[in-house]
Amino acid sequence: MIVELRFDAQRPRRWMRHVMALLGGGPHAVQIAWVRTEAERAAGLESLLELERMLMRRGRSCGADADTDFAQASRPALQAADIVVDFTAMPRDPAHTYLHYLRPLYDGAAGEDAAIAAIVAGDLPRIDIADEMSDAIAWSGKPSGEAADGLGGAIETVMARTATLLKGVIDSGPRPALPHPAPHPRSPRAPAAFVLRGLAECIARRVYRLCCYSPHWRIGWRHTDDAGIWTSGDLSGPSWRAVPSPANRFYADPFPITWKGRTFVFFEELDHRVGKGFISAIEFGESGPIGEAIPVLDEPWHLSYPFLIVHDDQLWMIPESSTQHEVTIYRCVEFPRRWERHATLLSGVEFADATIVEHDGWHYMFGATRDGAGGYSDTLSIYHADNLFGPWLPHAQRPVLVDRASARPAGQFVHHGGRLWRPVQDCTRGYGGALGLAEITELSPTRFAQTVHHTVSPGPRWPGRKLHTLNRCGRLELIDGTIIQPRIEGLRLPDKLGAPAAADSR
Image (tube, rainbow, N blue to C red; front, side):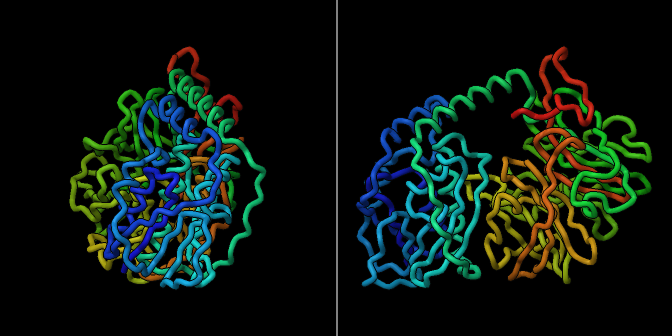
């Protein structure tokens, strides 16, 4: 199978290398055809991107950088292609037929300029992969922007997730056909204002981080006699209280467990002065936290999201270690303090927030994956196994979902109302901005579907701008979120839920 990538000959960029590497990483041969387009160049675009590179990224390159070396080095003789991926807006020659003729659309329009127009208008575009041989949309997705620094970073993010969608279509086949989206009407906007505003915001963030620890997460808890958020779909009910934490450390990703007659909440603890997370635990009683948090698991690399599971009458933990490109399971040898590394469940994959559920005789592992570029929270991948320790096999749909509002796990699965649910991170307004409550309507080694019924955002009952974990154990319900945390003692605000000053201004 030969896949031909058609790129704009007048605008070679570094993101094209990523596309070629990702799509060429399987059984397909990849070739590049450089196309002379008739697109008008945005005035001063390259100078603006260079300004961002120097001031915003301090000389660090990104996918939007010009790459004439790639254009010169990737001009081999072309063979007859089976699949064409056309990144331009040039019309297809109807005299030629292919197995698939895939064209990425950005808010309904083709070409990099369409993606830039959407970004400059204020948001990352919806990405549709149109197959012009069947006149159908083969797959769609919405990228997350937590890694999108400025215009250049946004271009890189959008094109990286375009590559993810394309690889999914080529490797796993088109998803159920969707109608063609209508092009989004936009008034032309010059990128200069967008770039200058981005530079100003970048400076403001740097000043903010000089004055405050950022982000500063904290854990909220309450006791409730019903199913809490799973019943109400919001934060109403008993008041939330924050777990006390040192000013220079944040607590996030709470996972509770009652084991051997005692209830502990395990969570990520991060010392802002070090910048690396580890796993700690704090005991809970009927009146709330008992004593101080204690460290229980540390590694040379960052750990977070301590997913807990009971199996064969033993307690196991799978903390996130996506920076190591592996998923590792630990066995509790002395509750709650001592854990030993037991096995590596997955390796060679950037897999965040591993969350396991047993369903219809299979173990399913959900997690947010990343192809080496773009956002960290918009792509959901699933693995399945007939045993907790594997071997874990990839789902037939690889990945199963690209959607910033409902991909990344946010806590344990829940059986509620006779149905299977999972909390998800809604990153529409940024990483960890809100929670979604998603019902799993189809789950097998070959099929997956979910429906988000409620979105839960922070507000007067839980001030701040973030809310990205939901878990419970018995009557104990837990969430987390961010607040302003000044570095200087005298400037620190009282931690009162409901106080307007507690909102995170980032």
